[in-house]
Image 1: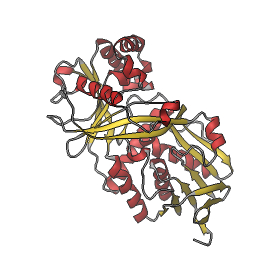
Image 2: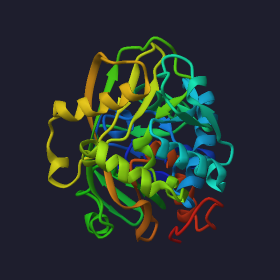
Image 3: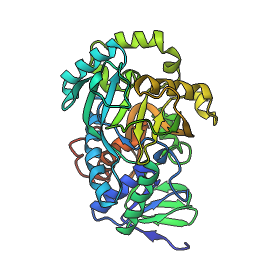
Image 4: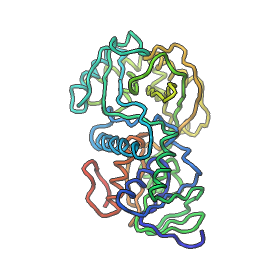
Length: 382
């Protein structure tokens, strides 16, 4: 490309956050161009559960973003022929303290729509000795490694232009300079994902963002079908939404005694089922120097699998596939900044990209258009 190409909106990054911006631009009737350095999605957007999590998200803007994004996922999944593999969430209680936390959560405003179930009422493959479970109707699950390419393909058929294998060298108001020439647009959204050092690294550093590494696996199908996504006690001390439960410290204290190694590795259980019956299982969280380590120690995987066996009747899960993921982590769940006029930097710093992407994109594009933020927004620059 030797000449300058113009558009209404240029989006840097074709991960789930960038694709969400492309969808919002399309819905606004904008001519959008998405630029990405890779030939296809390869990062956090395809290395996750495909699980749009609502229940347990932090009270306030993150929860509202998740609810809004869940609704948009349902719309775009139908349009782009993306299968929704299951809906809802079961948070299973192994310990009495977890039952109390779940009961308190269910009774709070954050637990709206959720109900408690006796452990014995859960079907196979759940363990018969589970004490109880919180059942949420709010979540949906897609297969990320299939959903993200399908979403990108559908956006392209609707008129969004993609420039892949294209590095972005610099961004200024009205222009994006790439390895294939310059793009001009009055609206530019930078969605860098895990690239924290190329574009606006000073802003990212000021926000305290750094990489987090996690372990994930695919295991062979259990003897039974999961009715929804699954979590366990460990998730209650990981997800900020459960902090509304007064008895949470008692559960945390018991877990620190009984599951100290799992807590130290940042493990909380999520298990979701794929179309072939296999389970995607994770995960762990490693920060600082540990996040730079490209290897996957077996002992961390074993801790994740042991938690899975505490919830499902799978004493020796057969691992079919293992992989590492990375995502930006920081003191906020996400942020949108305006480093210069006509440019917004959007970064999710909590591993909630799939769960909040569409709401964040709506906020970002409204900000670029000089409009009031949507109802779910908070603190968006204008």
